[in-house]
Length: 239
Ligand SMILES: [Zn+2]
Image (tube, rainbow, N blue to C red; front, side, top):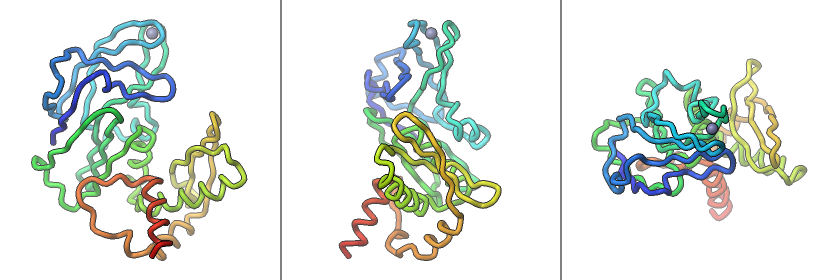
């Protein structure tokens, strides 16, 4: 699998806070084809003290590292000089050959194009995510063999419900299935994270009542997120 990237300062994926400056060691990499299976040497610049540090990023993430993806620690870097922990975001993908999952993190401001010809991805669930939060969530969902489309519709319903009472709600993410079978979600209201749990039966009911059109054939990598869920609801109303 290859990515074609336009390497510029744009590679610095802008996070809201604690953004880390990912600077490419060699600007001649501009428009060069990068084999994503390989490690890549970059220079990190601490946003607090300015310390420069060479660092290897690994574009291909395997199931053995999934816990670090689920808690997003894989996207953190601690400055050895001042100790500041910063977000480190770069294009990467997660692949689980047993579960036939491949999830791509494609940052904003980076042009990537996927060449699937090196891979046999028949029967794989192929997803693209835009943020590390979505990437981490997607792997949490698919790793449990849940249907991510149903999860997104469930999230949309929950979001709408909570938003009526709490308009400061900005985000909702699937977290895990609790021991009692309930589905736990992380929600964010302004700067405050919080959690909610709903009965797993709601998910099962949605799986049963899901309109057939949602199961339409997928071509290539799909971005299945809240926007997608919203577009399905709109489609449902128009029909
Ligand atoms: Zn520092």
